[in-house]
Amino acid sequence: MIRQAIIPLAGLGTRLLPLTSVYAKELLPINGKIGLEYIIEECTQAGIKEIVFIISKKKEIIKKYFYNDAFYKNIIKKKNDLRIAQEYKKIKKYKKMIKFVYQNNPKGTGDAVLKTKKIIKDEFFLMLLPDDLIIKKNCSKAMISIHNKKKCSVMASMKVNKKTVNRWGIFSKKKNISKNNFYIDDVVEKPTTKSAPSNNAVIGRYILPKKIFTKLKKQKKGKGGEIHITDSIRQLINEGEKFIAHNFDGKYLDCGTMTGYIKSSIEVSKK
Ligand code: G1P
Image 1 (tube, rainbow, N blue to C red):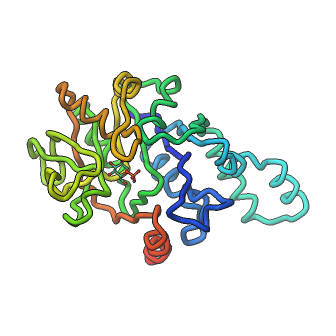
Image 2: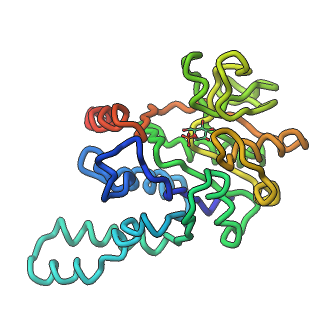
Image 3: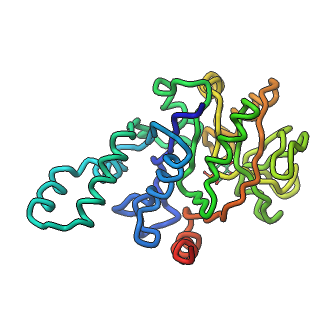
């Protein structure tokens, strides 16, 4: 059973400047709702009971968003507004599920995951990268269902344009399980077009085994001087750990770039 999810939120969001100069990118609205709420909803609807937010001192605004009780109580007392009361109720519900850990020096996704080591209880846990919004179909739910059948790690995937492979973790297939699910043979972080084993990319949803922490502890810096989760996954695969790639059915929206972020509001409003 997958009960815990982790969300790395310590990134600076430079690709979305100036929107992120005083604000967290994950709190930016997408069609009237903060981006992070779509991710939280994906978790709760997939049966997740506890969510670990990996933030930094610079991103404490995210914690404040969920801990602004005095402000809400005061407003609700003054104004008898049902909508505000309902929104506050929802925030309180989420707050109960959320734990915070700190990654004050953003050294990469692998380093962010390592910060949750003491909190993760079960053999497997879910990670969602908040820049990757997947709408119309709950990707995490589909991945958890595959995990329950195969009892191994699962990552979301999709085919990307060959010219853009250097933006993604790219994997090669070992064996087909079904039309949309494959065992992975190898995975490389941001390869060049020439060296890429395929154009199958990893998208930001991962069901990872607890044993990844032992790899992350020793993980050296990789592409761009960052500690990548992909490099530890690669080691585990080499040692025989099974990883499945799941080609998801939903629509992918890249909220981490300005054009992607603008497009995401338009796409979500079409729903
Ligand atoms: C991260 C991962 C990469 C993956 C991508 C999906 O990259 O390192 O393997 O393909 O997320 O969005 P980032 O977006 O942090 O550069």
